[in-house]
Image 1: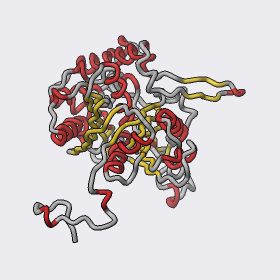
Image 2 (image 1 turned 135 degrees about the horizontal axis):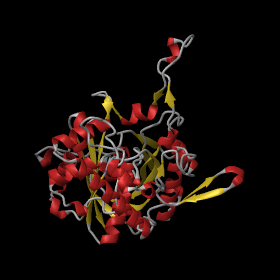
Image 3 (image 1 turned 180 degrees about the vertical axis):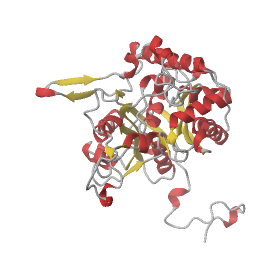
Image 4 (image 1 turned 45 degrees about the vertical axis):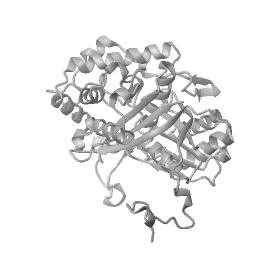
Length: 417
């Protein structure tokens, strides 16, 4: 009946009812916030993924100075949903005070979930389906339950049953090769000829940058402090990431391989840790900016994905970045700052080597090795931090990219305003 892609422009007819697709809307980031990143079993372990998400939802809306009933849609990444109750994103939205009439969507693209949620929110605004979309990601790895597989019908009449760690099975285990994702990190280091010393050097640098950023208050604007209630009503305020304070360079360099014990080079020290946290960004169109006199932090220029062999997920960000820059008609030299998620030190090093990105422009405030990697949150977290980096350095364009289990990666290009 009609076509939007016909080479013959005279054949293009836009029927009534879909005129909103005539013009794509620009996407702006009105606010960006995250929780502190809690250590595994640490200060945030008493909070659920719903608690963490609702905290950033409320703060993102508050910082944009709009009312909660103006939000058109909520889209959040979340990987480890077992035990969190039905539709955790919906729970968080309602808990934060967003009207029950606002639709909510949870996204699971493993570690890329938070960034993919931003893709979806951006598309909703581009297509004029929404004016305001609240996006982000959340994860409480401390609260993931253990499973007893096939217990429902196989019967447990006699003998022991094996417990399955839900966090590892659904978040950290390569289902295609039946190994921990750390083995893929070792494989990448071997294939890319990256030494153990290079991995440890990169990890130590990540910690030092994160500690310096903490000391200089460079994370303060992006973090919403959380109040944790303890025994007898005692309250504790958590306002800083926990992992950087655990840094001990001598111990880091002395650690044994964590995965391939014989020939591996990925350790607990040069890999990201297990963590709790959430991040949220409020995306709006130009009409909303004018209506509420908002000053945007940045404009989302482009976004892209990539996928290849599951065991090569560590280098998937290279493909996602290539696709991103091709769509934007830009080069590596056009980008001022990079956030490449440090699932393992080898990821950022391999991508930097393949694309010839200067290391001094990558993760300038430290990365997931030092700060932590709550997997459903991290894609959104790196974009929040990228905004802080660009603001501090005066840079104009930045790219956030993150790999994910199964061989994929996602990326986003922003322009600071």
